[in-house]
Image (cartoon, rainbow, N blue to C red; front, side, top):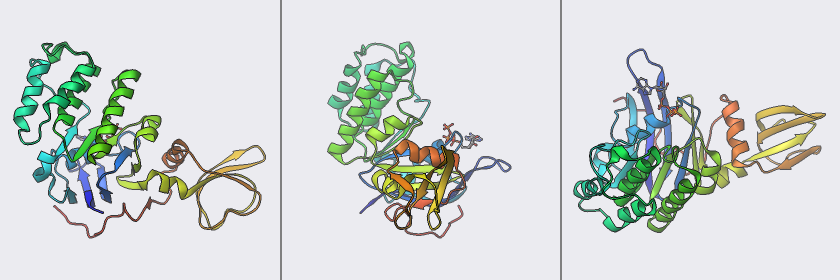
Length: 297
Ligand SMILES: Nc1ncnc2c1ncn2[C@@H]1O[C@H](COP(=O)(O)OP(=O)(O)OP(=O)(O)O)[C@@H](O)[C@H]1O
């Protein structure tokens, strides 16, 4: 299984006295996955994506993108930042022409145009005259027109209306499936991620706390309700419910008598881990970094 991104002991500190946005963060993202990148505000999601895009340098450790240093992989990587920088004075058509010039070897003009046309955007309209959601569409057309091997998307759909979000997410996912593109996408909208993604990276405390295929991660946990012993299992979160408790556990063997056992939804899994920042991390074997030796930059 080849690797799209591999982080080893990755650290990032802004300024000398700043707290660490990333701290000894190690993981591997196999190619071909559509991975959600989740975590509370300030968890380091944008920082990680910027480092992978080659726009920000880490303070410690190493990050490899498609087997190379991030700067060297840039031609095969599309990055969509939260602020989606576009030139306000250019028209939509000029912006796509610029995409063609900057990515001569890979540019798919028909595809980029199709994405813009699906939003009924006037090619002559200046970027400055577009709404936030319309700019997002142009930025996505630039990113997808590049036909990247890896897409790094920082909350890409936040300012789109529900219909446009559904349509563009569908385009993105169909494209990724057809071309085997790896996608790493940060978002706070869990329902959007549950529909689109097959892989999850949960960041917290500067590290990956949950990493792996969504089905594998859900399958490793159970939502149990009842009374009795849960010893032997890792209790991620437990709350009083009726006369017993409801707990999200990481199973180690069968759950004893007296418990009703359900599979958690992705949202239940994420919320329990977000509410319990000290729960032990779980990275499935395909997501654990191969090398754990930290390298200081
Ligand atoms: N340019 C910067 N200068 C100083 N500190 C920064 C800078 N950018 C980010 N940070 C800090 O680094 C930490 C991680 O920020 P980052 O933007 O990566 O988090 P995030 O997970 O993307 O957050 P959100 O969900 O709110 O977008 C935060 O504590 C933030 O204050």
